[in-house]
Length: 138
Image (tube, rainbow, N blue to C red; front, side, top):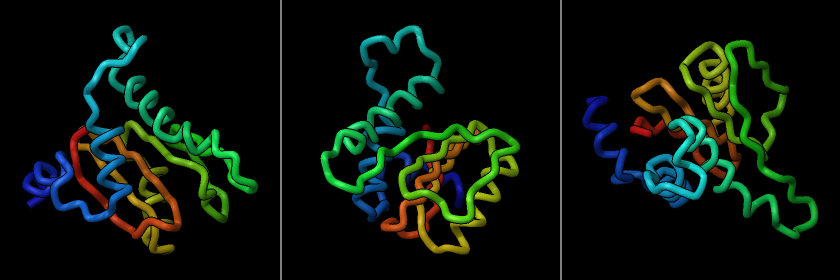
């Protein structure tokens, strides 16, 4: 069932959230090359697309809007009591930090986790998103 779910979700089929669909197709699954990407590795290209995706949010002229940042999780990463609304987490492997963050989001009931078959994870803990784990390729 996991293979079928990954294949189906890898192109965006069966994903009902407009944010999750756009994030999957425009950031995680985008294979286009950008200026300066030819000398970068796969991970660096993905992180560049993540930062480019959140960049328009950083330029928002609205009062009280904090910039969104991309945080790379390490094995010993710790989290505050409240998860900030302005952070997207990336991890290369499913280690204890990713498991702890997923357990925290399960308890809170919000946020989307995108898991790759290679072990990488992108976690978007925004309160306006329902709790969902999407197995895909990126």
